[in-house]
Amino acid sequence: MNASRRTLLQTALLAAAGIGATPAGLAQGDWPQKPITMIVPFPPGGVADTVARPVAEALSRELRQPVVVDNRAGAGGAVGIGFAARAPADGYTVLLSLSSISILPEADAILERKPAYQMNQFRPIARFTADPTVLVVRADAPWKSLAEFIADARTKPGTYNYGSSGNYGTMHVPMEMLKNAAGFRMTHIPYTGAGPAVMALLAGQVDAVASGPATVVQQINAGKLRALAHWGDQPLAALPGVPSLQQAGYDVKFAQWSGLFVPAGTPDEVVRKLRAASAKVAADPAVAQVIEKAGSPLAYLDAPAFQTYWNADASTMTEAVRKIGRVE
Image (cartoon, rainbow, N blue to C red; front, side):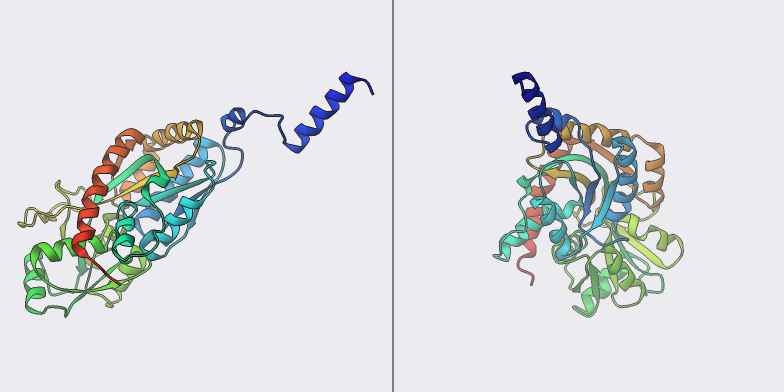
Protein backbone atom coordinates (compact mmCIF):
# COMPACT_ATOMS: atom_id res chain seq x y z
CA MET A 1 0.00 0.00 0.00
CA ASN A 2 1.54 3.36 -0.97
CA ALA A 3 1.88 6.26 1.48
CA SER A 4 -1.00 8.32 0.13
CA ARG A 5 -3.48 5.39 0.27
CA ARG A 6 -2.29 4.55 3.78
CA THR A 7 -2.91 8.17 4.90
CA LEU A 8 -6.41 8.18 3.38
CA LEU A 9 -7.26 4.88 5.08
CA GLN A 10 -6.02 6.14 8.45
CA THR A 11 -8.05 9.34 8.10
CA ALA A 12 -11.19 7.36 7.25
CA LEU A 13 -10.70 5.04 10.20
CA LEU A 14 -10.19 7.96 12.57
CA ALA A 15 -13.28 9.72 11.24
CA ALA A 16 -15.38 6.56 11.64
CA ALA A 17 -14.20 6.24 15.23
CA GLY A 18 -14.74 9.94 15.91
CA ILE A 19 -11.09 10.37 16.94
CA GLY A 20 -9.05 13.39 16.00
CA ALA A 21 -10.80 14.04 12.68
CA THR A 22 -12.79 17.06 13.91
CA PRO A 23 -11.27 19.95 15.84
CA ALA A 24 -12.89 20.66 19.24
CA GLY A 25 -14.02 24.11 18.14
CA LEU A 26 -15.87 22.67 15.14
CA ALA A 27 -17.54 20.06 17.32
CA GLN A 28 -18.81 22.81 19.62
CA GLY A 29 -19.94 24.82 16.64
CA ASP A 30 -22.13 21.93 15.54
CA TRP A 31 -23.99 21.88 18.86
CA PRO A 32 -26.62 20.60 19.42
CA GLN A 33 -26.43 17.19 17.79
CA LYS A 34 -28.67 15.28 20.23
CA PRO A 35 -31.54 15.94 22.68
CA ILE A 36 -30.99 18.36 25.56
CA THR A 37 -32.17 17.65 29.10
CA MET A 38 -33.72 20.52 31.05
CA ILE A 39 -33.51 19.84 34.78
CA VAL A 40 -36.40 21.29 36.79
CA PRO A 41 -35.65 20.85 40.51
CA PHE A 42 -39.31 20.69 41.54
CA PRO A 43 -42.24 18.36 40.84
CA PRO A 44 -44.84 19.09 38.14
CA GLY A 45 -47.44 21.72 38.94
CA GLY A 46 -45.23 24.44 40.41
CA VAL A 47 -43.93 27.73 39.05
CA ALA A 48 -40.69 26.26 37.68
CA ASP A 49 -42.54 23.54 35.81
CA THR A 50 -45.14 26.01 34.50
CA VAL A 51 -42.37 28.09 32.93
CA ALA A 52 -40.14 25.19 31.90
CA ARG A 53 -42.61 23.35 29.67
CA PRO A 54 -43.47 26.12 27.18
CA VAL A 55 -39.85 27.32 27.23
CA ALA A 56 -38.54 23.80 26.54
CA GLU A 57 -40.99 23.32 23.69
CA ALA A 58 -39.99 26.63 22.10
CA LEU A 59 -36.26 25.96 22.58
CA SER A 60 -36.76 22.62 20.83
CA ARG A 61 -37.98 24.48 17.76
CA GLU A 62 -35.19 27.06 17.87
CA LEU A 63 -32.38 24.54 18.43
CA ARG A 64 -33.92 21.82 16.21
CA GLN A 65 -33.36 19.20 18.90
CA PRO A 66 -35.76 17.95 21.58
CA VAL A 67 -35.43 19.72 24.94
CA VAL A 68 -36.78 17.23 27.47
CA VAL A 69 -37.98 18.38 30.91
CA ASP A 70 -36.66 16.21 33.74
CA ASN A 71 -38.30 16.94 37.12
CA ARG A 72 -35.81 16.11 39.89
CA ALA A 73 -37.48 17.28 43.08
CA GLY A 74 -36.29 17.19 46.65
CA ALA A 75 -34.72 19.24 49.47
CA GLY A 76 -36.31 22.52 48.37
CA GLY A 77 -34.66 22.27 44.94
CA ALA A 78 -31.19 21.20 46.11
CA VAL A 79 -31.44 17.70 44.61
CA GLY A 80 -32.06 18.89 41.06
CA ILE A 81 -29.78 21.92 41.22
CA GLY A 82 -26.96 19.78 42.61
CA PHE A 83 -27.49 17.23 39.85
CA ALA A 84 -27.26 19.96 37.20
CA ALA A 85 -24.11 21.38 38.81
CA ARG A 86 -22.38 18.00 38.46
CA ALA A 87 -23.53 17.40 34.87
CA PRO A 88 -21.03 17.50 31.99
CA ALA A 89 -20.51 21.08 30.80
CA ASP A 90 -21.29 20.24 27.18
CA GLY A 91 -24.59 22.05 26.66
CA TYR A 92 -26.71 18.91 26.82
CA THR A 93 -27.87 19.53 30.40
CA VAL A 94 -29.46 22.86 31.30
CA LEU A 95 -31.21 23.97 34.48
CA LEU A 96 -34.49 25.87 34.82
CA SER A 97 -34.35 27.06 38.41
CA LEU A 98 -36.21 29.42 40.69
CA SER A 99 -34.62 31.95 43.03
CA SER A 100 -33.98 29.12 45.49
CA ILE A 101 -30.66 28.71 43.67
CA SER A 102 -29.59 31.89 45.54
CA ILE A 103 -30.78 30.60 48.92
CA LEU A 104 -29.69 27.01 49.38
CA PRO A 105 -25.87 27.41 49.58
CA GLU A 106 -26.25 29.72 52.59
CA ALA A 107 -28.73 27.29 54.16
CA ASP A 108 -26.16 24.51 53.82
CA ALA A 109 -23.59 26.73 55.52
CA ILE A 110 -25.92 27.45 58.43
CA LEU A 111 -26.70 23.75 58.81
CA GLU A 112 -22.96 22.95 58.67
CA ARG A 113 -23.39 20.36 55.95
CA LYS A 114 -21.68 19.75 52.65
CA PRO A 115 -23.20 22.10 50.06
CA ALA A 116 -25.23 20.50 47.29
CA TYR A 117 -23.66 23.04 44.92
CA GLN A 118 -22.14 26.51 44.80
CA MET A 119 -23.53 29.33 42.68
CA ASN A 120 -20.24 29.71 40.83
CA GLN A 121 -20.83 26.26 39.35
CA PHE A 122 -23.38 27.84 36.98
CA ARG A 123 -23.49 30.37 34.15
CA PRO A 124 -26.77 32.27 33.74
CA ILE A 125 -28.36 32.24 30.30
CA ALA A 126 -31.66 34.11 30.66
CA ARG A 127 -34.27 35.13 33.20
CA PHE A 128 -37.83 34.49 32.03
CA THR A 129 -40.11 35.54 34.90
CA ALA A 130 -39.88 37.44 38.20
CA ASP A 131 -43.11 37.12 40.13
CA PRO A 132 -43.83 38.48 43.60
CA THR A 133 -44.92 35.75 45.99
CA VAL A 134 -48.62 35.79 46.89
CA LEU A 135 -50.10 34.92 50.30
CA VAL A 136 -53.14 32.69 49.78
CA VAL A 137 -55.63 30.93 52.03
CA ARG A 138 -58.67 28.81 51.25
CA ALA A 139 -61.76 30.70 50.14
CA ASP A 140 -63.66 29.41 53.19
CA ALA A 141 -60.99 30.63 55.63
CA PRO A 142 -62.14 33.19 58.22
CA TRP A 143 -59.60 35.84 57.09
CA LYS A 144 -60.84 38.32 54.49
CA SER A 145 -57.74 40.54 54.68
CA LEU A 146 -54.07 40.48 55.59
CA ALA A 147 -54.82 42.48 58.74
CA GLU A 148 -57.30 39.85 59.95
CA PHE A 149 -54.86 37.04 59.16
CA ILE A 150 -51.97 38.63 61.07
CA ALA A 151 -54.14 39.67 64.03
CA ASP A 152 -55.49 36.13 64.42
CA ALA A 153 -52.03 34.57 64.07
CA ARG A 154 -50.68 36.93 66.75
CA THR A 155 -53.36 35.94 69.25
CA LYS A 156 -52.89 32.20 68.57
CA PRO A 157 -49.13 31.74 68.16
CA GLY A 158 -48.19 28.44 66.55
CA THR A 159 -51.82 27.35 66.10
CA TYR A 160 -51.90 27.84 62.34
CA ASN A 161 -49.51 26.32 59.81
CA TYR A 162 -48.32 27.02 56.31
CA GLY A 163 -46.99 24.80 53.54
CA SER A 164 -43.89 25.30 51.45
CA SER A 165 -41.76 23.66 48.77
CA GLY A 166 -39.15 22.71 51.38
CA ASN A 167 -36.87 24.21 54.01
CA TYR A 168 -35.27 27.46 52.82
CA GLY A 169 -37.19 27.25 49.52
CA THR A 170 -38.98 30.04 47.68
CA MET A 171 -42.18 29.45 49.66
CA HIS A 172 -40.48 29.13 53.04
CA VAL A 173 -38.19 32.18 53.01
CA PRO A 174 -40.85 34.82 52.14
CA MET A 175 -43.19 33.56 54.86
CA GLU A 176 -40.39 33.72 57.42
CA MET A 177 -39.61 37.27 56.26
CA LEU A 178 -43.27 38.24 56.79
CA LYS A 179 -43.44 36.52 60.19
CA ASN A 180 -40.34 38.39 61.36
CA ALA A 181 -41.64 41.72 60.06
CA ALA A 182 -45.18 41.35 61.43
CA GLY A 183 -44.38 39.56 64.68
CA PHE A 184 -46.45 36.38 64.58
CA ARG A 185 -45.79 32.64 64.68
CA MET A 186 -46.97 29.82 62.41
CA THR A 187 -45.86 26.21 62.07
CA HIS A 188 -43.94 25.42 58.90
CA ILE A 189 -44.88 22.23 56.98
CA PRO A 190 -42.42 21.50 54.13
CA TYR A 191 -43.45 19.57 51.00
CA THR A 192 -41.48 18.51 47.92
CA GLY A 193 -42.66 21.39 45.76
CA ALA A 194 -45.20 24.17 45.22
CA GLY A 195 -47.75 21.85 43.60
CA PRO A 196 -47.98 19.48 46.60
CA ALA A 197 -48.04 22.43 49.02
CA VAL A 198 -50.97 24.05 47.20
CA MET A 199 -52.80 20.71 47.08
CA ALA A 200 -52.30 20.43 50.85
CA LEU A 201 -53.84 23.88 51.26
CA LEU A 202 -56.86 22.93 49.13
CA ALA A 203 -57.25 19.72 51.15
CA GLY A 204 -57.24 21.60 54.46
CA GLN A 205 -53.91 20.16 55.65
CA VAL A 206 -52.33 23.61 55.94
CA ASP A 207 -53.83 27.06 56.48
CA ALA A 208 -51.81 29.20 54.07
CA VAL A 209 -49.04 29.21 51.47
CA ALA A 210 -46.82 31.87 49.95
CA SER A 211 -46.61 30.96 46.28
CA GLY A 212 -45.84 32.38 42.88
CA PRO A 213 -49.02 33.55 41.08
CA ALA A 214 -48.74 30.89 38.38
CA THR A 215 -49.35 28.12 40.91
CA VAL A 216 -52.47 29.62 42.48
CA VAL A 217 -54.13 32.09 40.11
CA GLN A 218 -56.43 29.50 38.52
CA GLN A 219 -57.59 28.31 41.94
CA ILE A 220 -58.18 31.93 42.97
CA ASN A 221 -60.20 32.63 39.84
CA ALA A 222 -62.18 29.43 40.44
CA GLY A 223 -63.15 30.66 43.89
CA LYS A 224 -61.22 27.98 45.78
CA LEU A 225 -58.45 30.18 47.17
CA ARG A 226 -58.26 33.79 48.37
CA ALA A 227 -55.23 36.07 47.91
CA LEU A 228 -54.54 38.34 50.89
CA ALA A 229 -51.35 40.15 49.83
CA HIS A 230 -48.23 39.93 47.69
CA TRP A 231 -44.51 40.53 48.19
CA GLY A 232 -44.03 42.86 45.20
CA ASP A 233 -43.67 46.62 44.75
CA GLN A 234 -45.95 46.95 41.72
CA PRO A 235 -49.62 45.95 41.20
CA LEU A 236 -50.09 42.40 39.91
CA ALA A 237 -51.81 42.24 36.53
CA ALA A 238 -53.00 38.69 37.23
CA LEU A 239 -54.46 39.66 40.62
CA PRO A 240 -55.71 43.25 40.45
CA GLY A 241 -56.79 44.68 43.77
CA VAL A 242 -54.57 42.45 45.89
CA PRO A 243 -52.46 44.76 48.10
CA SER A 244 -48.72 44.52 48.61
CA LEU A 245 -47.10 43.97 51.99
CA GLN A 246 -45.50 47.39 51.63
CA GLN A 247 -48.93 48.96 51.29
CA ALA A 248 -49.85 47.23 54.55
CA GLY A 249 -46.81 48.74 56.26
CA TYR A 250 -44.36 45.83 56.09
CA ASP A 251 -41.07 46.51 54.30
CA VAL A 252 -40.80 43.03 52.81
CA LYS A 253 -40.21 42.10 49.16
CA PHE A 254 -39.56 38.77 47.51
CA ALA A 255 -39.54 37.72 43.86
CA GLN A 256 -39.89 34.10 42.82
CA TRP A 257 -38.01 34.40 39.55
CA SER A 258 -37.21 31.68 37.02
CA GLY A 259 -34.06 31.47 34.95
CA LEU A 260 -32.07 29.21 32.65
CA PHE A 261 -28.55 28.12 33.62
CA VAL A 262 -25.76 25.85 32.36
CA PRO A 263 -22.76 24.34 34.18
CA ALA A 264 -19.96 26.91 34.52
CA GLY A 265 -17.56 25.21 32.09
CA THR A 266 -19.99 25.17 29.16
CA PRO A 267 -18.23 26.40 25.96
CA ASP A 268 -18.82 30.04 24.99
CA GLU A 269 -20.21 29.08 21.60
CA VAL A 270 -22.87 26.88 23.22
CA VAL A 271 -23.74 29.68 25.64
CA ARG A 272 -24.03 32.11 22.74
CA LYS A 273 -26.46 29.82 20.92
CA LEU A 274 -28.53 29.26 24.07
CA ARG A 275 -28.72 33.00 24.72
CA ALA A 276 -29.83 33.68 21.15
CA ALA A 277 -32.43 30.91 21.28
CA SER A 278 -33.70 32.10 24.68
CA ALA A 279 -34.11 35.65 23.37
CA LYS A 280 -36.26 34.34 20.51
CA VAL A 281 -38.28 32.21 22.93
CA ALA A 282 -38.94 35.23 25.17
CA ALA A 283 -40.07 37.24 22.14
CA ASP A 284 -42.47 34.52 20.96
CA PRO A 285 -46.07 35.70 21.59
CA ALA A 286 -47.26 32.09 21.89
CA VAL A 287 -44.83 31.41 24.74
CA ALA A 288 -45.75 34.66 26.48
CA GLN A 289 -49.44 33.82 26.17
CA VAL A 290 -49.05 30.39 27.79
CA ILE A 291 -46.96 31.70 30.69
CA GLU A 292 -49.05 34.82 31.23
CA LYS A 293 -52.27 32.78 31.18
CA ALA A 294 -50.84 30.85 34.12
CA GLY A 295 -50.27 34.14 35.96
CA SER A 296 -46.58 34.81 35.28
CA PRO A 297 -45.88 37.69 32.89
CA LEU A 298 -42.56 37.41 31.09
CA ALA A 299 -39.73 39.47 32.59
CA TYR A 300 -36.86 38.52 30.27
CA LEU A 301 -33.24 39.42 30.98
CA ASP A 302 -30.28 38.36 28.84
CA ALA A 303 -27.22 36.85 30.53
CA PRO A 304 -25.28 40.03 31.49
CA ALA A 305 -28.29 41.79 33.02
CA PHE A 306 -29.45 38.54 34.58
CA GLN A 307 -26.02 38.04 36.20
CA THR A 308 -26.26 41.52 37.78
CA TYR A 309 -29.80 40.82 38.98
CA TRP A 310 -28.79 37.40 40.33
CA ASN A 311 -25.85 38.85 42.28
CA ALA A 312 -28.10 41.40 44.00
CA ASP A 313 -30.79 38.82 44.71
CA ALA A 314 -28.27 36.39 46.19
CA SER A 315 -27.03 39.09 48.55
CA THR A 316 -30.58 39.81 49.76
CA MET A 317 -31.43 36.13 50.12
CA THR A 318 -28.25 35.38 52.05
CA GLU A 319 -29.21 38.04 54.59
CA ALA A 320 -32.77 36.64 54.85
CA VAL A 321 -31.55 33.09 55.42
CA ARG A 322 -29.16 34.24 58.13
CA LYS A 323 -32.07 35.87 59.94
CA ILE A 324 -34.11 32.67 59.70
CA GLY A 325 -31.24 30.70 61.19
CA ARG A 326 -31.01 26.98 61.66
CA VAL A 327 -34.05 24.95 60.56
CA GLU A 328 -33.87 21.15 60.67
